[in-house]
Length: 132
Image 1 (cartoon, one colour):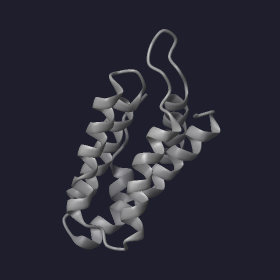
Image 2: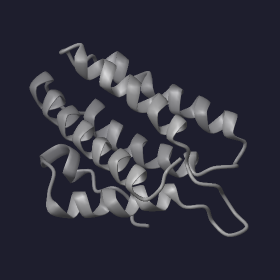
Image 3: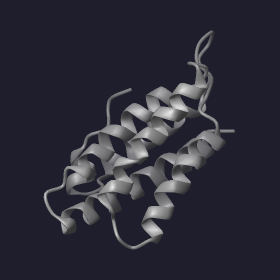
Image 4: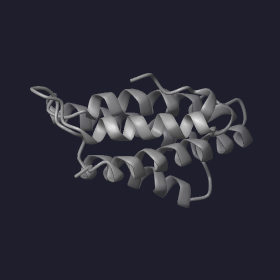
C-alpha cells in the first residue's frame, strides 16, 4: 500500500485521497494469511475519539496534537505486533506531522480539518470492509 500523500492534508482532500482511504481502510480491515490480524474497531475508535475531542474543542492546540503521537506509540507497544496498528500509526503520524508543522494557526486549522476528513474516510471504509 502506498503511503499517505501529505499534500492531501496540507492542500485539501481530492478524489485520489478518498481512493487511498478506501484502500487503506480495506487493508486495515483484513487479516493477513499467517501474519498480522486486522486492526480492530476498538483500536481505531480509541484514537478517533481523541481526534474528535480535539475537533469539538474548537481550537487546534499544537500541544494536544503532539500528544496524539504518544497515544499511538502506546497502542503499538501494547499490541506486541499482533495487528496492523503499527501500519496505521505510521500513516497517521505522517499526516499529524503535516498538521503540527503548519506555519500558522489558520493553516493548522485547515490541515487539521483535512486530517479529520481523511481519518473519517478511513474509519468508514474500515467498517465497510468488515472491520471488527
